Amino acid sequence: MGKNLKRLHNLELLSFYLWKATKILTVFSLTILFVIASSKISYAENGNNNEQSVYKTWNMNSSGIGHLIGRSDGDGWSANIAQDPPGVLSYGPYETGVKSGRWAVNWVMKIDNNHVDNADVVRLEVYDADEEGIIASNVISRQQFAKADQFQEFTVQFTQLNPSHRLEFRVFWYDKAYVNLKTVSLKYVEDNKAKFWQVAKASQISHQVGRLDGGGWSANTAQDSVGFLSYGPYETEINSGIWSVSWLMKIDNNRANNANVVRLDIYDADAKEVLLSKEITRQQFTKENQFQNFSLQFSHFNPSHRLEFRTFWYDEAYINLYSLSLEALDDKTSKTWEAAKSPEISHIIGRLDGIGWSANTDQDSPGFLSYGPYVTGVDLGVWIVNWSMKIDNISLDNAEVLRLEIYDSDAGEVLMTKEIKRREFTKENEFQDFSLQFPNFDPSHHLEFRTFWYDKANINLHNISLKKFNSNTIQYLYDKTGRLIYYIYPTGRVINLQYDRNGNLLYKKELDKIVDKGD
Image (cartoon, helix red, strand yellow):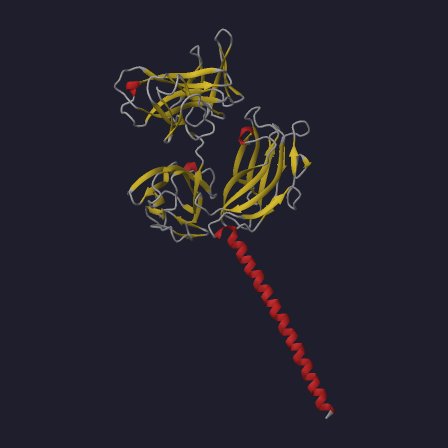
């Protein structure tokens, strides 16, 4: 009897411990499932749900972040011209495991003074520490800071090819201004402003020639004939605007000759039209067997149309195409202000009228229908200002109804002016464009594009726009005495000519480098 009771007691203990073990295992299993699920949710938040969310953020004291100059300063790390020489304000964090795809690095910084000049103050770099090469970079000038002593975010996007490589997000300081760097963050990019296709894997990309080769798709002269190395992706989710397409490719030999090796094109599959194309020659590859980006910029007007970014291979060299990327661009060469809505535009006379700002002979006296926008940072070169306006009557007479002006508010000087007569309007009550072209010599100056009304007709001003004059020839800029003072190459290279008091040429200089002394 006692043995039986002991056995029963042992069985009860065993059952109790089994039950406890089951509970522990259940909790443990649920914990693991929760961790795995959380990990998957976190990964989805890092870009797979068409969002752009923070993958990781580093402050200036984080492990992996180093500094060659500067010091701890509040929440950040700063350098100033009184204490520091030019150098690396921050480097690191040597991040690995960053998956292939399109990424954005954001630096949060502030400056003490954003108006004294427009010098370059820092260079932001995405650096591959294993390849020992810069993947992407951007130079930030003083006036790109919108406000003084206020933290602002600056971004550089890049394509990640090697998840095992160590990445640095560096800041080189030029010793031109106090700069305080607060944080660096890394984000995965997947939205309507940036897209990425790995050509060997993306289902939207097709091929007429070539084969899978490492992480890319290649063709070679021994195995392939001419044809499309890639076509597609028939993308429709592209808003109207200015875009850049980049092809990431490498070549085996960049010295044999300078033949065309591929043709890149942007093709509208619905209009059946090549929108833009570019021939790439062998020697445009700067290194052999190293991936390099080639880009095309284009303006897009039909968001419903299917676009292809194609690669035609000429059977002249081994080519490996890794990826295609698409990125929306801010158009830094043009800007538009609505006369009735833009806060930068002011008025002495007139009133809101539909989509514009108008003055009429019954209610108004002569005066400025618009002035402003006091725009600064307009690059050296030739620009075009456009006024969009309409008039009520074009047949009454041919009186001057408006004066358009380009005014330098820092110099207190009218740079260019034009009188507009009634009959220069070709139709009544229909908006029409009037333009003035002008050379800009000082990017730091504040410019106005003014409209003076003569009280001769009812005028409605819709908008004012500024656009850079793009030329395939050299632009020549002259001062008021007729002396040539600048010539600007289509590549952006600028030569300045300096004269003495008697008008004799002293020298020519490119930036701070003298390239030709005068006689």
